[in-house]
Length: 384
Image (cartoon, rainbow, N blue to C red):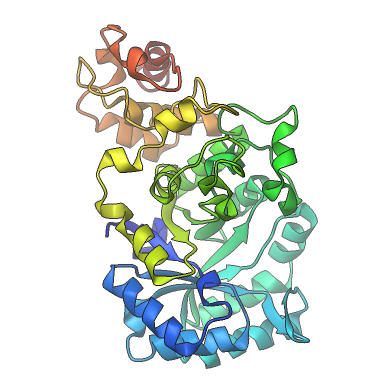
């Protein structure tokens, strides 16, 4: 297992994590076995959004005596009310649900207190300007949560959260299908195949998504990924908007090559599915490679946008083209040159100005990227 920094939190987390859907409808024995297998595979990052009492109890029992091995993001505003899950902003319910979480998990702290499911602008304004954020800050001051996070499916709202300075972690739905859609306050459109027939669906990453990834990378706000498989649709050629099936490893690799991403939380209904996801880190690059598939898909083929896949290598002049393009994209997305990005670029041994315009990289690129033009653009940004 490989590990990454959780942004500016100062915590190292497994690049593949585990979501809590795995525990729905399962007993204590299953939870114990799955968490044992996760830890054995090197997974240390876990999401717990589900407020069902038996799930929290099972997780707490399995975690007991080894709390230090778990980096846990658990959600504020996710409550069990009248026998069902509800997202709530009613503060009595929010506080009761979170105290219940501490009790059932048998812990006195959570690593990331994730404000749950903020997709709408009005909701964002109410949460960040009202009692929910005040409560999150109180918990942080008391040491009951170490860092504040927010989960969302809407990159436009997530950008505002990243800019607020209030959150250190954003949980976002990330995969190549969602990345080509414009922002929406309606999460349901992400799961409808008809959405991809709309005229505003792109053949490359939506610019607001790119802005979010860029902002998080430069500001040290970690992204943790939900929905890396698009609810399973990307694994099925008949369901995928691209008309081809991706493997679990290809989906994870797509997520983990986006700027700002620290961990992709895989859904796993069985131990075998968990181990398949956890094996990602040890796979050879050709098993992870998504470039040829997305560059030649029968529908919504990605084109003229660097996906940082590395197929352009090796460069005749020794330029790390994918990394240089990433630095350029980070600046263009934010319409500025963050000092952290400038420092990283200046540290490169071989810069864009070394390009000899041989064109070999463009012949190899699955996405038709005009690499030589990109190198000139990079020189204008960083070397003039």
